[in-house]
Length: 257
Image 1 (cartoon, rainbow, N blue to C red):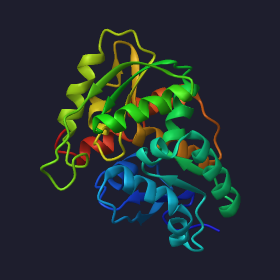
Image 2 (cartoon, rainbow, N blue to C red; image 1 turned 90 degrees about the vertical axis):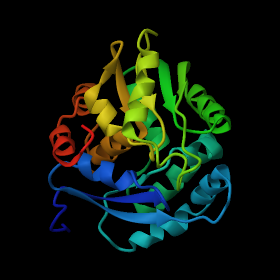
Image 3 (spheres, rainbow, N blue to C red; image 1 turned 90 degrees about the horizontal axis):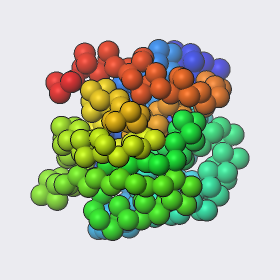
Image 4 (cartoon, helix red, strand yellow; image 1 turned 120 degrees about the vertical axis):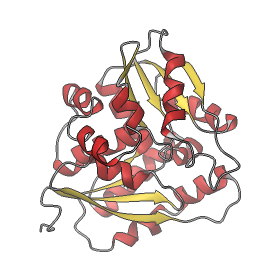
């Protein structure tokens, strides 16, 4: 069964309730013939960590919003939920939802893990928009997956705005890359699906020879491969990081690139 605007695959995307970045960046990276439908995850918890756990706890209910749409993969557009839930629970939930829905369930966290492993990267640097406690939690997540976090850049978030992370400008995210220039890293990961990262990556796909990725870029890459039935390929990932297939669209529609 095909859909008019998605003859090559339809992705169901789960997005945190106030996130203003997941959908625009995902649409920018989708190739012709692949489309998405979106569902919002809700929480009334006051703390960031509380909301993230709520999102993870409610995944079964969130997935039901797609009903019988012919999706070929489901993408979880939050990385923080994976950090606070932990890798064991994340893997259990991925296995359970993949079994229940019959399609691949892709989390942003495991998409980054897949990308780093595909590039055989071990020493990584991270650019984090999170408050310090969540940044420490995420370092533990990456280290448990076997990566060595040798560089950490903390981006000042915006607690005075509607959301401290979603209101960060791409220019601020790009500034953080400069601090990782001479560290001899294997890869750099820009964290947070709510921090705009496509402009900075397109402007600077490498830092000191290390490929620059983000949670959103990895989530889109892994989800597109999943819905099309493609296996991870290092060469294709490098080209994707350089903007193949999406860079021209971003330039055409962005005022900041």
